[in-house]
Amino acid sequence: MMSVLRQFSPNQEVYSIDECFLALDGFNLDLTAYGQVIRQRVHRWTGIPVCVGIGPSKTLAKLANHIAKKRPEWNSVCDLGTLSEQDLNTLLGSIEVGEVWGVGSRIREKLATLKIHTVLALKQADAGLIRRQFSVVTERTVMELRGVSCMTLEEVALAKQQIMCSRSFGAPVMDITGLQEAVTSYATTAAEKLRRQSSVAGAVQVFISTGPFREDDPQYSQGLTIPLPDTTSNTLKLVKAALWGLRRIYRPGYRYAKAGVMLMNVTPAAAQQNSLFADEVADESAVQLMQTMDLINRKMGKDSVFLASAGIRKHWQMKRGNKSPCYTTDWTQLAQVQS
Image (cartoon, rainbow, N blue to C red; front, top):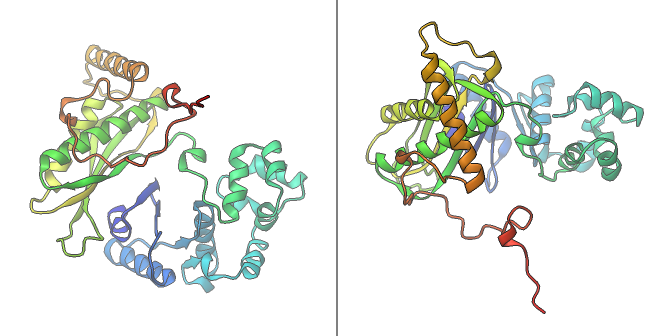
């Protein structure tokens, strides 16, 4: 299903095994009709019925998806952008606040003490008061309900059930060597995130795609999920599986614009069940190796230690010429005042 959905936007953010976000910025078309095309193609190609929610922020998109599921008059596709402000407020006023993404039972009960029972009431609440009473994350939820996109997935999720690393290339990649370098780099980053939340993965998905906006180029998009014999957070094993999958989906003759790796079936490392024939000494050595790599990269900087298959020159890396300075996290980039 995710492979089908990937065809409809150059930017896909997988949230869970059956949910994802697609960026539709700059799409000059009828988004409701586009949502119907998405829904019909997924059902036709996979047999899975889906609903589509469209909004200016992730929170509103999730809420629109809830509306599309629960209210037949929307025909499984809800675009909140088609409503006037008055009609939107009327709709939000009819929905219980607990349906908002990130508002759990405890937050809902506390909101009730402030007489906030509906989505509209939360949208119209004093953002400063919400921040003082709850947290900056809940304040951002208020802003997102007002159509201001300011919340990332990491701010609402606990331990992730999937971990994905994906980037568009700075220049088209024509050969498998460049793709192998990118996939190795992305799998390494995803593995580091996996260990950071003390989890292990049971499967690896790798995907590649050409640029959908280069209409003169032949198009190709494909992905493959590789189940692992044992759950692991070992970068070497995860990279090996990802590269194995890449070799099977790679097709020569295309100008690839994007690749990605997603770790799936993520579970807590504390609940990991080893294989009957596992080599405990080798496993312990691998754990120590990964801990050492993470420690060096944290102290000396990202990619101070990396796998050789990630390459050195990395001509495919995303262009970052206009990246803002890290004023709050890097001493060397603090603003200076000349007297």
